[in-house]
Length: 66
Image 1 (cartoon, one colour):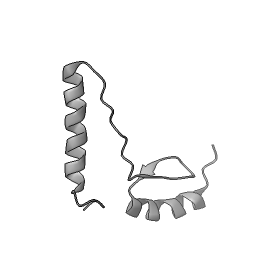
Image 2 (cartoon, rainbow, N blue to C red):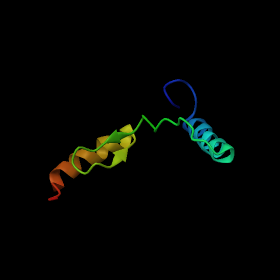
Image 3 (cartoon, helix red, strand yellow):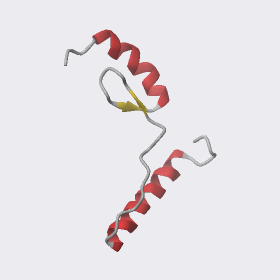
Image 4 (cartoon, rainbow, N blue to C red):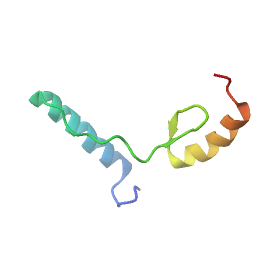
């Protein structure tokens, strides 16, 4: 469950509904990006907290040469 008590699927559903509603009305919605994602400092990809804990150490070891 998310920190505020709402399940993850419910937050995603609400965000999706806001986007659809904005598209139908022809306006742009003030949709907030998903803040619960952690960005990898090495490659720039975003992950959930648990996935980031697994990904980041290995990604730093691989040290992509960009």
